[in-house]
View 1 (cartoon, rainbow, N blue to C red):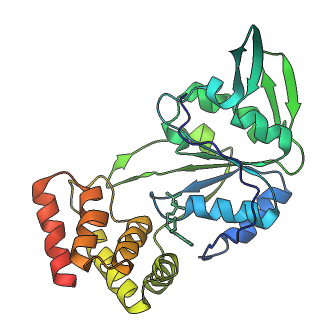
View 2 (view 1 turned 90 degrees about the vertical axis):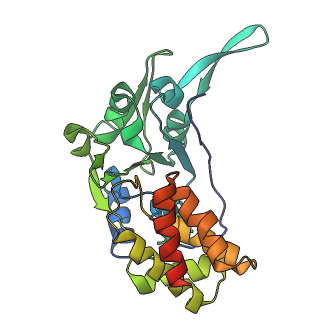
Length: 268
Ligand code: ADP
């Protein structure tokens, strides 16, 4: 199976999402107008959380697919499987989402093979349809169906390109790490750590983000800050928490890790 995560979420657990700008309004307009939406932004910047929040807000099931280089159209649309003596058709997540009029979230879309992305094209334009070649079935998406895709345009020139012709099929929004006070609020709320300590972590993140260290493939995300904050809240000393939750996940290179740890030491 090439899909690393597929789930349907119909729960109403009150998913916390801190609004940053007008993203909720844009999303709602896209949903009403049957327009697909592309979320661009670095890893851990709240894209998935936002989509989960919107699914809850619109009271729609959510199907999530995380793509990687092996993800194929079959993984998305479905396949014949052998059950006992029979060969039966099994819907993939895209087909299920279309049938149910759900939200379909395709994460890391730039990682998928081009033919996989092409298999979604008919869902992104006026046709809003899905042709299942293997069964000959033609599905038309119900009004509530919406396709949302996300990708990380890359950090420090390590670009993961999405073809321009694909990008132009979507209404697009950029996500980034939020400004200091908002990020502090998110980190404190997610970890239950005191605001003052959360603010220290956010300050540390600013310093690391300003480093311009060429050896870093990604910089510190809100997700890593939340993880560090949770460890501190549980009683781990801040420096150990930052080492395990921030420094180690960011690099395997000893020199870079030492440089990052120096910044941690200066901050705590
Ligand atoms: P992405 O999908 O962009 O990789 P996520 O949505 O998984 O990132 O966000 C990572 C974590 O950061 C979330 O689990 C949440 O704890 C936190 N987070 C980031 N932005 C927000 C936000 N605006 N509101 C609430 N939590 C957020």
